[in-house]
Image (cartoon, rainbow, N blue to C red; front, top):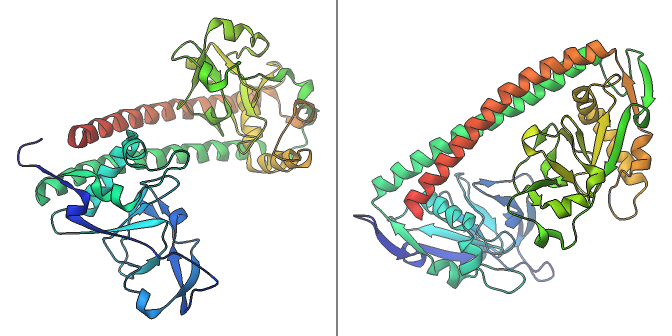
Length: 394
């Protein structure tokens, strides 16, 4: 325990109340908007999708959320929390705990502490009740021990962590601006690719590529993945214009041998062909090679003398192309979106002069170098944020 800090149960420094249990057949009174679990995101409350139900006048005070109250999800992503920061109170339902604090604890200090417990798996593992579906019942929530330094120390910690968070968010916004710039350059140089207003030659994707193909999941699924080895790229890694390294799977040489028909090469275009992420597309980063893909990701390898890989990627992720691909994905699938190889082979690609494509690629490569610096800075700041969270809350 840190000098001058005490530990108390959450129930000793806050009052908790679950919201109203809704029953549309029996509820009486006047209709009011209310908050439910889907409105509470981490550190943010979304009021754009509020529903309404009837509350009697005698219920308004009991089920009212006031400025400074912390709302905590009881089910689903248990422990997800946000502070109501508006002057106007709002009502809430029973999927949420309302924490109202005594003078000893700052709501934001508590939110950051709960976030730390959540990220370490402690909220779910130690305080979540239930075998298959976890719930954070009131007694468990109030039993959580929480450090209680002085209010000035709490404010100093909150200010430090919030500053780091704001730096991270600003840098992520900077990445989005770089992505917008890249799309703007694409449209300036090539116009709307779907209308082909420049009148360039158009060919089927199969006629301008040397490979279109997806892989498979090794026998045993997730349980067969290794801590290191050859990368297995899945749809969760492929986002439009960017590769996400989180949860990148790995397989051993024997497993990779079974997928030798889908060896990923440098500058391959990765394209999601099924599920909710269908049509997402990016270039494989060289630092994940050697690699294979599973059955939800297709390798698209362009003929270098006809198509530049960056032009092809940005053509596929252009808004109008994405809309067309999403429509296609729903036209031939009974239960889920899908873009099978036979469909992708027929997808039409306009072919600007190769020097123009290469000029575009040079501009994108310059942007990507800047993005890499920002991403490195984000990773370093996130590492610092996590280390400070551990320092204060571990």
